[in-house]
Amino acid sequence: MVTEITDGVKVSVETIYQPEYSNPANEHFMFAYKVSIENLTEHSVQLLNRHWKIFDSNGAHRDVDGEGVVGQQPVIEPGDSHEYVSGCNLKTDIGSMKGFYEMKRIADGSRFQVNVPIFYLIAPYKLN
Image 1 (cartoon, rainbow, N blue to C red):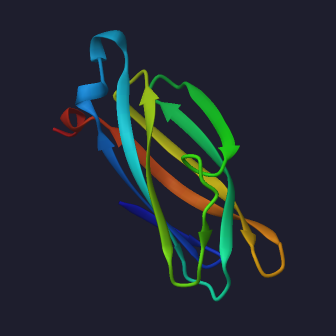
Image 2 (tube, rainbow, N blue to C red; image 1 turned 180 degrees about the vertical axis):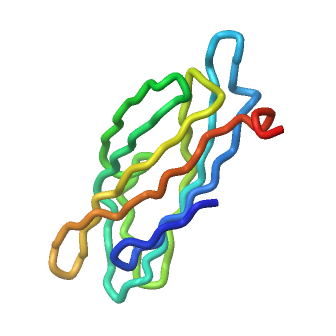
């Protein structure tokens, strides 16, 4: 698991290779990732948008932008957290993701970015 705190918002990510949804012979590798976003501030915050940079070991790169996460734009109260699980497919058995969330402080409407630390997508057999 990797973790980073930006402006009092803690983001932790854990990854899992999904062999049952992967097909290596066709260059299709599926990974799931679980994200926990914890509000360590004294203000309610809302996750508005996400931005991902996705890389594979062939050097391919793609950017993904969108509203919220898995169809939600959660409001996270002070001391609370929001968790979700999503997935990413690659054409290789090793890759990485990093990015940021655009957040809003509910009290004053100010917007800020929260970093998502780089996390690696690696099929377990590559680690042996």
